[in-house]
Image 1 (cartoon, rainbow, N blue to C red):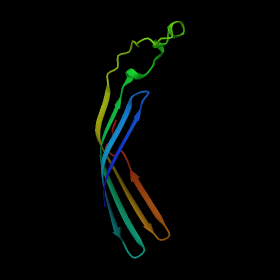
Image 2: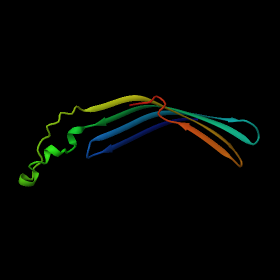
Image 3: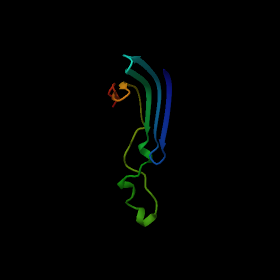
Image 4: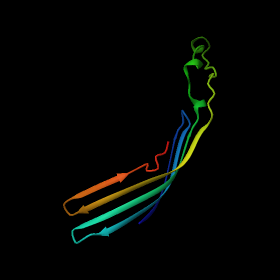
Length: 111
């Protein structure tokens, strides 16, 4: 079997965005009349983005009680965006009475 998977998520308060585009492959091998072995593999292109400028830090709230305004922070944060390849795989053995599965995610050990 072949599959294409796209996921997207956004958190508006911190402007954190996550997007994954993956290609999946699965194969089923019949071992005998009672059991099967299924193997799956996924390769994905992952994008993560985070903007620190949308967060509120303690130094911005010093005058908040008097003025009601949030001051700009003294911190200087760059826009943090990362892209990487992520590999996952799985193995699944099953029969009419039993099953056993194993999976491994983030095999490329992304930071």
